[in-house]
Amino acid sequence: LQALSTTTCRPFDAARDGLALGEGAGLLALESEDSARRRGATILGEIAGYGATTDIHHLTQPHPEGAAALAAMRKACAQARVTPEQVGYVNAHGTGTPHNDSSEARALVDFAGNAADRLQVSSTKGGLGHLLGAAGAVEAVVCLMVLTGQWLPPQLQLAQPDPLCRFRLIREPT
Image (cartoon, rainbow, N blue to C red; front, side):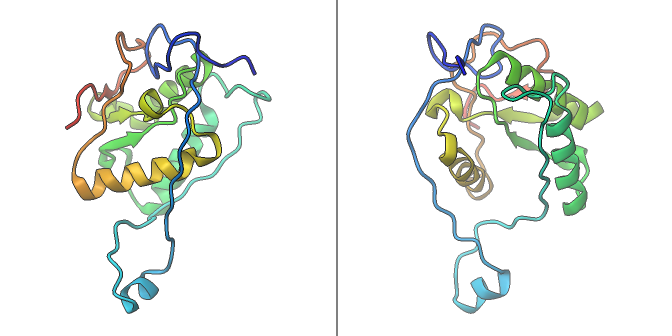
């Protein structure tokens, strides 16, 4: 795919040039609330809404306007009965590739609308690299850590944000 960075992975940075591969794994136990309560489990989170789409724009590149990502976010919020203004944090895919990050930035700005300047965003790939098949599970674990620990992970390797990023890229852990 010729998508590897020659330096480091810099999601949403104006000078980003590709992704960096990482290694990792995440494990989540998904079960019904009734089942978890019956066995006395500590419930860390709930999947309140889910939006799945596919991007058939190109074999390896997303639609430049982020159409599929935008549709997925809207579906998830509709299912969860949440408005974009109620979303406080997005764990972005943020691969550090020019096409993906600009597409995702456009989708996030369109999604948030007038609330874009309040939407807090970061991608873990600047610190962990792209974990490929494990990325979704690890990022779900990060989101649970955000919810339970009340902290927001910073966007590592960010020097100069891309002007398309009209949302709040988290620069320091909060």
